[in-house]
Length: 100
Image (tube, rainbow, N blue to C red):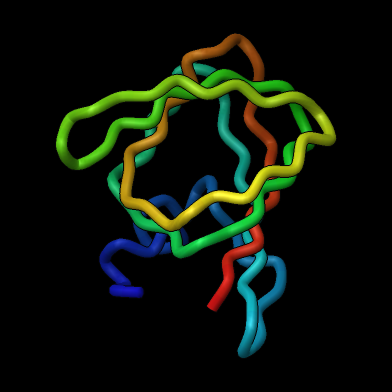
């Protein structure tokens, strides 16, 4: 991944590396209502939600998609580039397991 699109570089205040090896990188992500990330990219990943959340994803072609999470939710995601915005009234607290 190009470092300029790495969420740990673009949004180091909300993304933290909690484990990394030659096969995966595990990130924690935490933000508050109203927070909006800068554009960044993820490879294919598994997301584990520790909280309820409502977010808007904004893609480079200006398409938008709203997503909601519940505690304990586990989902597989294909890699993509986006801006994320917390449009709910709760903090977002998730773990991302990015595949290498």
